[in-house]
Length: 195
Ligand SMILES: [Zn+2]
Image (cartoon, rainbow, N blue to C red; front, side):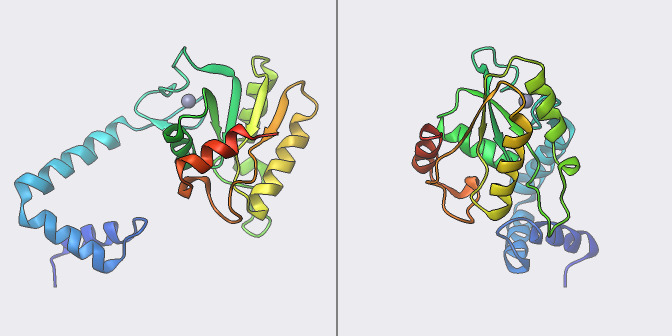
């Protein structure tokens, strides 16, 4: 139906979250109907983003600078580190504006079924941050799934030897729900009611 270039574009959109073949075709058609107004600016924005994207060497956040803008922000409390599974969770907590400390992005959870072990996650770098001595509290803001709970338990054990205080977000977090899908109020309550 469409040429090779257009089909490649449709397939890229179709793989994005919330989209399928049908939505992808509609988006591409919309872009093509006004190339100068939509397609060209999109291509430019994508190229700029691809050039600028950096993974923060301190916390694992995605930003256009390294260290990321959160780690580089001197107003933030570096003694409180909030551990999250992914960058989407970090962004959700930032939107809720309840955490004045810094973050550590694990990159997933431990999973026996999925074959994900501690060496596949940013665990070593977290332990190094803590042993460097500037951290007073580690907040485990992991989702309330079996894997999330297993990961929280594992981290709490690994951190027990250090003098750091380890807290977990309260279970306002629905079972099986990732932090990213929660509304800001629920997130705020969960974080403030940590223990
Ligand atoms: Zn960072």
